[in-house]
Structures are given as C-alpha cells and as structure tokens.
Image 1 (spheres, rainbow, N blue to C red):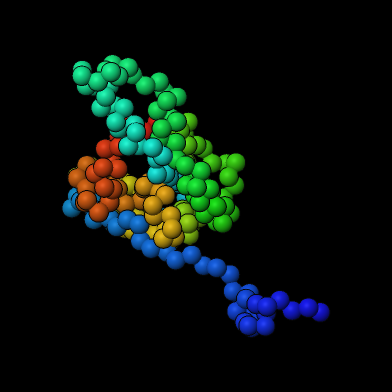
Image 2: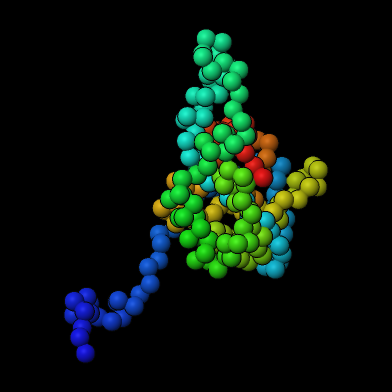
Length: 200
C-alpha cells in the first residue's frame, strides 16, 4: 500500500478534520427604544430569508444615471432599458458561486431559491431553526410598545468572513425600519438598493 506524502507528515486524525470557515459578525442591531423583546419563536416557524448580493458594475451604472440627468452629456435622456440595468447590477460569477456554495453547505436546495431578474436578490423559505443555523443567530419576536406591531428579528448575525464582501445584507435580521443605527446597513448600500436594484 502506497502512502501519500501528506500521510507521512500528518496523522490521519489531522487529515480527517473538515475545513470550518471562520465566522465573523456581519451586522449588529441597536433596536429603537420603542421596540422590546417580546417572546421566543418556535423553531418550526416559517421564515423567508432575502439575501442582497454585492452588485456587479455599480460604478458604471451610477455614471450612466448621472449622464442621463446631465443636459451637457451626450447621453442626456438616453434612458437605460431594464435589461441594461440588470446586466450592470448582476453580481459577478465569483459572488454567485460563493453564495450558492455557502447555502448548499447548509443543505439548501439551490433549485428552490428564488432569484431576481438581475440575480442580486435571493429568497428562500426555511424554518426559524434552519435560519438560526445558517446565520449563527437567535431570532426573537419584538413588540412595538406603541403600535403593538410585532417583528421577527435578531440582535446580530454572522457569516463566513470571506462572504462579507459578497453579501450586502440579509433580511429579516437586524433592521427594524424607520430610525436605524449606522451599524446596520451602510447608507451607500441602502441608497443603492432603494433606487437602483432590480428586484423580482
């Protein structure tokens, strides 16, 4: 029986240890004062997770939009088609592959994922228990003291460090709407998503 060079240098127990990605906190919540933790959530409760992926060529899209609104530009009022916007914001293949691999490693059927036309938003239905494993978090039901509205949120969530640059945000997680902390979603990302993202 021939032994590989690695087996001569390292014990079999070391070689058998699977690779575990380094997790790092992606977002921390600072709930507005009118929201309080209200109740735990049953693990089997359904939840839809939405992933906003890093968009591809956003600087070019931003420049095109500025040109369209500039009377001195040769492109003034030459509005982009829906397909042109989708092509510019579509995440690159490395981003799509990395995110798909991450979800697949958690047993997610990639065929069950709903994707926006530009591929920059992914949605999947899971249980709260599954979402907590994927995001290394704990969900709670929060209650608004004035309106009695409830929200399913978490105080923080984590992702493998190498995915931090590939995923802009995941919802529902730490965002409560209205007044928010700058730690939740950078303003540049929020602005970009609000006005320019092409969703399903």
